[in-house]
Length: 640
Ligand code: ADP
Image (cartoon, rainbow, N blue to C red; front, side):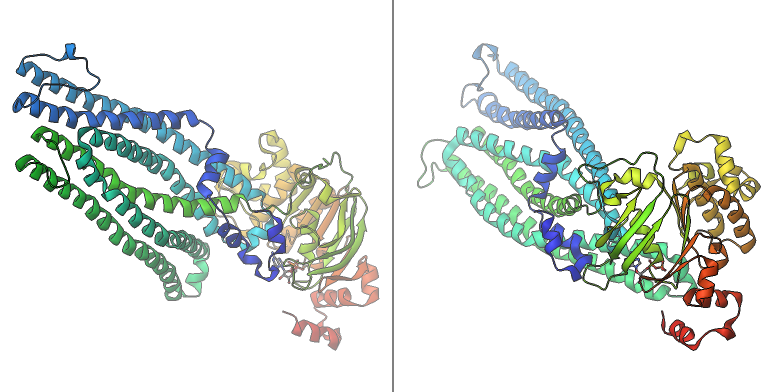
C-alpha cells in the first residue's frame, strides 16, 4: 500500500487515517518478521532445532516401554529396537530391564537439557526481537507529523508500544516454538504410528481432517474478535490516560461519577469483546478435545478388540498387548499436540491483530520529513521570509492562514499580536516545519524550509511556548536538554540568570540538582517558563521564537526577563507573541493578525496613529475602554 492512498482518501475523515491505514495491513506478522526478525535468526534456528530433538527424544520412552512389556514381561517377542545394534542389547531379562531403564532415563535427561537450550535461545531471540521492534516503532513514531499527534490519542499509541509489541514477542517466544513442536510431534508420531500398525494408525488419524475443518471454522470467526479486542485495549488506555492527565479537572468539577461511567463503558467494551472470544473458545477448545479424545477412545476400543478377539472387520494381522500399549501411549502424545493447535491458533490471532496495529503505525507515511537532498543550514543569518502563505490544519476546512506575507532581516524583532485564534502560533509553527504550508513558502536565509534538513532547521530556531514540559530529572538536566553534556556549569548559571531563574533555583534545597517533573518538586507555570527560556538561551540559536513565553510570570519578573532578553535578542531574529502589548511595544515590526490574515503592520507608534485594531487593543490594555469604537466592542463580543 502506498502513501498516495492516504492523500487520496476522504479528507474530512482525517482523524481515522491511522485506523484506516492499519485495517489495510496484510500478513502483519510476516512483515514484522522479515523486517526485524532476520537479525540473530541463528538463536531462533537453534531453538527450533533443539525443540525438534527434544520432542523426538520424548517419544522414545513409550516406545521402549512397549518393547519391554512384550519382550521382558510377557516374553511374546524378542527384545528389538530400531537404530540400536543387536550386539548392544543384553540377553538376560533383568539386564534388559536395566537397559530399558537406562534408555528411558537417558531420554528424560536429554529432554531436560534440550529444553533448557531451547528456552534460552528462543527466549533470547523473541525478547531481542521485541526490543528491536519497540525501539524502531518508537523511532518511527517520533518522526511522524504533528498533525498525526493532533489526531491521535496517546493511550492508543502507548497500548501499541506496550501491549501489542509484547503480544508479538509472545508469539515468537511461545507460539512459534509450540507450532514447531506440534508439527514435529505430529509428523514424528504419525510416522511412528504407521510404523507400529498402519491400520490402527488410519483409525487414530481420522481425527485430523475433522479437526482441521473445525479449526478453520474457529479461525474465521475469531479473527475479527481479536481485532476488536486489541481496539478496545487501545480505547481503554486512551480513556485512562485522559482521565489521569485531567484528574485535577475531574476533582474540581466533581465529575467523578461521570468519569467513572465513561471508564466503565470502555472497560465494559473490553469485557464484551473478550467475552465474545471466550464464547467461541468455549466451543472450540472442548470441541477439539472431544474430537481428539474420541479418536483415542476409538483406538482403544478397536485395538482392545483386536487383542482380545482378533482383527476387527476390514483389518488383518496380529496386535500384541505391548504394541497396543505403545500405540495408545503414542496416540496420547498425538492428541496432546492436536489439542495445542487450538492454543496456537488463538495466540496467532492475537499476535496478528497486534501485528496489524504495529505495522500500521510503522507504515504511516511521514508528511513532514527531510527531503531526499536535504540541505544542512550552516551558520544561518536568520533572514526569514513568508511568501503569500496559506495553511489549514485540516484539508477541506477553511484555511487558518491566508496571504501571510512578510520579511524579517537578521537581528530584527517581530511581534505578532491579535485576538486569540487569529493564527499567531500557527504562523510560527510553519517556520519550524511542525506543519507544511498548503500554498506559498516560508524561507530561512533564502531557502525554502522544506528543502532544509529538519534537524539543522530546528537547531537554528529556539522555541519557548506557553506550555513548557519538564522531563523527570534535575533542573540542570532540564536546562541542558538539547545541549546535554556540552554545557559548562557556568554557562548554565548564566543562562538561568538571563532567564531570571537563578534566584528561585538557588532557593530550592538542592539548587540545580533538584529533581523536577512528575516525581520531583512541582514548579509553577512561571518557573517552568523561566527554565524553558534558560534552556533556549543555552542552545544559542539564530532565531528565537517566544510564543506567550512569559504569560505565566508576574509583571515585575517579566520586566526583568525582558531586560535580559533585550540583550540576548539584540543580534538575533526574534519572534514574539504576547498578549500584554507592553511586551511587544519595542519590536521593530508588529504584525497584527485577525482571522488568519495580517490586517496591520508597522511599529508601535505607526500602529497607534493608524488607529485600527492594534490601537484599540492597546486602549483595552491601558484601561481606556470608554474610547473604544462600537464596531470593535461588537467584534470582540462576537468572537469566541
Ligand atoms: P493564536 O495563536 O492566534 O491564538 P492559533 O494559531 O493557535 O491562534 O490558532 C489558529 C486557529 O487554528 C484556531 O482556530 C485554532 O482553533 C486552530 N488550531 C490551532 N492548532 C490546531 C491544531 N493543532 N489542529 C487543528 N486546528 C488548530
